[in-house]
Image 1 (cartoon, rainbow, N blue to C red):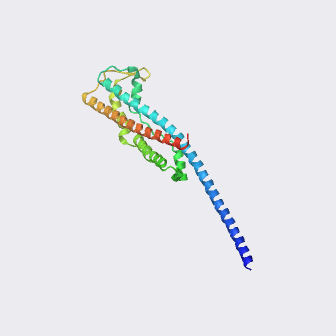
Image 2: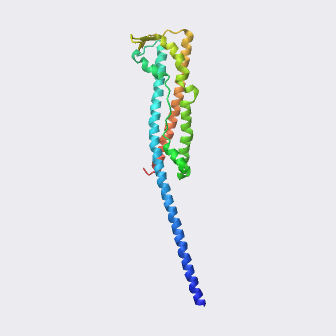
Length: 233
C-alpha cells in the first residue's frame, strides 16, 4: 500500500510540475510577445513622431523667414519716412510683408497615436517627458502666440492705421493698379509719430516671436536626435 501511495504521489507531483511548467512557459511566452509587440509599436510611433518633427522644422523655418521679411519691411518704411533712399520698385513686396500674419502648423499625428496607446509605451522616462513637454507646452505656446496673442495679430492691429498713412502716397496707372509710391512721404508730424510707433511695435513683436521660434527649433532638434538614438539610427 505504501509503495502504491508513493507511486501515486510521484505521479501527481510530476503531473503538477508539468502543468506548472506549461503554465509558466505560456505566461512567459505571452509576456515576451506582448513586450515585443509593445517595442515594435514604440518604434513605429517614435518613427512617426520623428518624421513629423522634420516637417515641423520646415514649417518653423518658413514662418521664421516670413517674420524676418516683416522686419525688413519695417526698416524699409522707416528709412522711407526718414527720407533715406529706398528701392521704390520693391515697395509692394514690403507693403504686403509689413503686417502679414502666420499660422503655426504642427504634425501631431504620431503624438496623438502615442496618447491613444498610452504614454507609458515609451520606456525611456526622459524621452517620454521631453516628447510630452514639446507637444503639450512649447507647441501650444507657439500656436497661441501666432494665432491668439493679440499684440502679434499684425493685420488686425496695425494694417488699417498704417495703410491710412501710406496709401495716399501710392501712384496708380490708368487701370487703377498700384505702380509705386511718392517719396518722401507726405505726413503730418503727429501722423508720422503714430506710424513710427506702430513700426517699432511690429519690429519688436516679430523679434520676440523669432526668439521663441529659435528656442522651439532647438528643442525639436534635440528631441529628434534622442529619438534617433533610441531607434538605433
